[in-house]
Amino acid sequence: MTKVLIATEKPFAAAAVQGIKGIFDAEGFETVLLEKYTEKSQLLEAVANVDAIIIRSDIIDKEVFDAAKNLKIVVRAGAGFDNVDLAEATAHNVCVMNTPGQNANAVAELVIGLLVFNARNRFNGKSGSELMGKKIGILAYGNVGRNVGRIAKGFGMDVYAYDAFIPAEAIKESGATPVASVAELFANCDVVSLHAPATDETKKSINYELLMKMPKNAVVINSARKEIIDEEGILKALTERTDLVYITDIMPGNHEAMLALGDRYFSTPKKMGAQTAEANNNAGLAAANQIVGFIKRGEERFRVNK
Ligand code: 3PG
Figure (cartoon, rainbow, N blue to C red):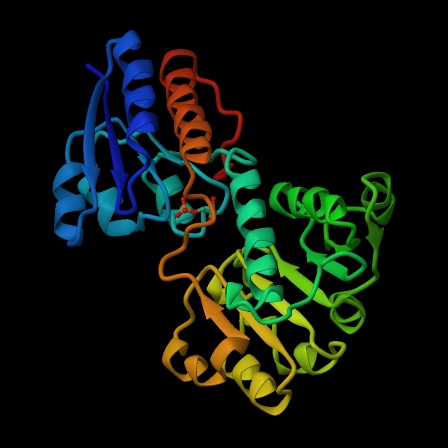
């Protein structure tokens, strides 16, 4: 019998877990649940005899692949798959997939919510500001970036975007204004919203120089990955430029030092962009269906370790 493990250190909503289980029940697959685990040993034990795993930001490395002798597929219920060692997956003959777009709206709504929270002084009653008429720059115009742009437009913001892999024409067609470089985005926008994945090219790329170029009272918001931030560099810029604000959904390594910036810095306690019932359901069910498609019919759409 095909055995599927749902390994989520940060659990899905209960209804999503039920939905996933329902898909596997209908196929005669067994579902095993490992939630909120605190030790890697729990994960290593749980993967021992499963054929497939659904994960979120859970780390799947060589040790996990070595322990999972029957493993054929890992599906990351979400967009970013930097938590999975793809080379080891391929070496162990395991297919890795993600579920692109399934949680994008949830992340985008959190971004806009945090921008309003900041513009209204964290709802402390003091006179704040509005988003309408401000320029928002979207760095990496994928599923999340486009959703941020869509909602920002509804707020009356001017939407600019930069993406190294998407032609300017396509950005224009979607209703945003393309810019030629990351530097231009930072130099021109009141808000820059980060949506780039953590890759060798993007790691530590959001740095002191970029922030120092921003207009007065600018805001940088990160709902992507902490690895793309040069944490010491942005702390330096925020210390020198007392008008700048940094908001993040991924707590930086220098969180304690950043707290000294007072209300010019805000981090959610735990990454929660994709933490909605709808996103859990969309991504979780997509992951389950992709596993069924792979096991039963050899379907490999959304495979990321080609
Ligand atoms: C993603 O890459 O899909 C998001 O960062 C969400 O991650 P999470 O499932 O760990 O909340």
